[in-house]
Length: 261
Length: 347
Ligand SMILES: Nc1ncnc2c1ncn2[C@@H]1O[C@H](COP(=O)(O)OP(=O)(O)O)[C@@H](O)[C@H]1O
Ligand SMILES: [Mg+2]
Image 1: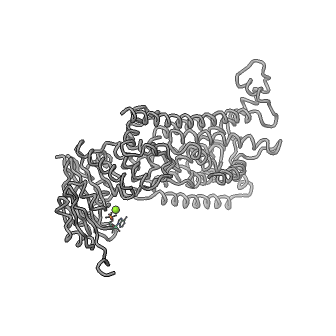
Image 2: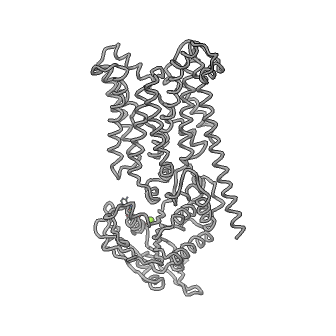
Image 3: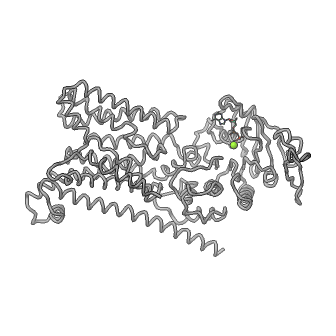
């Protein structure tokens, strides 16, 4: 069984239920986009899968392992997780940070192949020129690229990205997401990403999961999930749905005051 | 394809250049240590010239017997003790700062030194159980430091306790042990109180070949064990959540580092008394010079700590000719202005 299974998860943080009897199956080679308004429980869901937030009820299974029945270190091994918060308070260069993605292979003297692997990933993601810069001196978007390169270097089987493109320009957004796409298809990853841009989600994800108040409001292909009704219900925004030349939905919010001005 | 290859080769070259630069800085401070060691042996009530010192150390035949006695029986254990205690305090500070992700933390701010002071004062005031005082006082200091470390250990092993809370717990312990120390001093006779005060001024004159041996061996073992975790410690600087996602068992690492630092500083403080500030300043200077890649940060904190205490030892003898100030007083006197200068000169 190579799927990642969430079975009837209930998660409570403080007084908020961030997941209510939530069940999901994630398959290999597919990209899942988790959507939903602020505070819907998206980040918490990723943290829960990573084993960083305890579960009130339910189980998470992957291969023959069950979270909290296996050692946490063992459970986390196949997971590459990029948290939403990219702030790093360390006097390290961007290259140092990327190298940490492959912690097991680092020795006192960095050998040629380790360095090469790290720099190659940076080159592919488009941040090689930042290699010797202090991580603290980088912009939010640059840090996102570096941390994405770090996660990628670890060659995970499960890729979890929490708003990986929130601070990126249009070019780097598509570089990063294209990369996510290629890696997922080529290496058969399970990819779960939280993303706020519905049109980008529709372009890159195989399946969208629309979350609100800890429950799934809609799930399925982009054209099935991104209907004006459902989006209006979840986000409380009227949208216009267009289609690009590939038939992928493009979502445009309507101005609330556009009728009378 | 070949363009990509070239770009990556040049990035590798940049990285190598930066590594060599950082090793060179470590090497420079190794030489500073050696120079300071020579001066430390040369200075004292009867001044020796550096060449006399070197001849004596190299066991040349034409060295006077008196010089040999001065060098080997008096000066050398003290001078080497300065290096090894300085190294222990430098690395201890660096790793506590790493562990707590807080540049203001050091073994002192966590109350370890205050605990050592309390342990020593209890032995001085209430008796040494028949042991000679030179043995009983370090044992008392060591035991109490380990009690403090044990309490911190319990706090550190609570999974959900953040590093800020750990710093707070350490500061609370600092106050507790300091009050304990004041209480012991308050309860004891003036002469005894005086004796306690003297112990508290860290001083290298307590060094002997025997306690030098113990200190340097334990320091060397602890530092090499910490160095083995260099990359994990670097990863810890990314924050605990992220370090965990990189495959570090953060709880185990926390406890291991705390244990090694506690043992190392406890031994050092037990033999020489309280020497402040090195644990704070050495890692700061190291961080500014080579960053926080622990492959460089750790060894540089070590040699800067060693050089600093050794230089302070020289100064403690030459500031007022003929008088020997406790080195613990000198470190802060020269350390604080130096520290301010660094802070202000930083861009
Ligand atoms: N550490 C915490 N303590 C208490 N409540 C929390 C904590 N973290 C998140 N929450 C709450 O859980 C809910 C979901 O948060 P989160 O998963 O971060 O939302 P998002 O979908 O925006 O990523 C929010 O209502 C938030 O206030
Ligand atoms: Mg979030």
